[in-house]
Length: 168
Image (tube, rainbow, N blue to C red; front, top):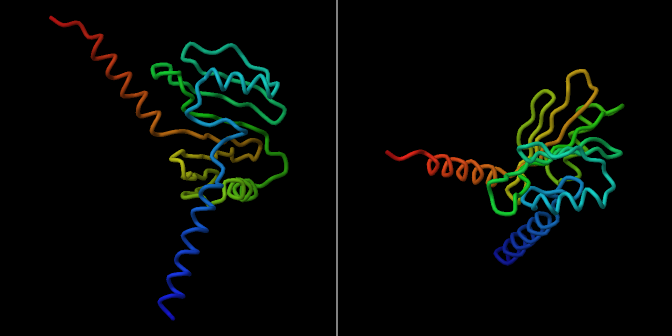
């Protein structure tokens, strides 16, 4: 009987954990690393955000009613995927602890690392979420990034650079 109860308890814990992970938030206002920049631009238009012209490195900065969003793009990978989504806003009356609690609640987990005015979360899909707040309490920023895509972009750049080297 004890073995059956223990087996059922473990099965329930695993299925509950799996359900929570499946429901975990992995985007920032609907934007996620890995989406092609063309799709990100379409989503920006749907959200009626105002954007500056893209920079030469593909970085796209847009302004919304809640704050500024910046997309970093790996132009050297197929479909030019977004590698990072940054969101910056003014945190009116919320303390740093309140901001951390709010982000933790939205993403369904506590930060893996927390220091003065910074916190980091490791999301189930492999993305990293970092929070930075200025010490004066005026503004905060969230950066959602894909370490895997960033590594792929670096490798593609290195391969291109070695290919472009003149051979004597």
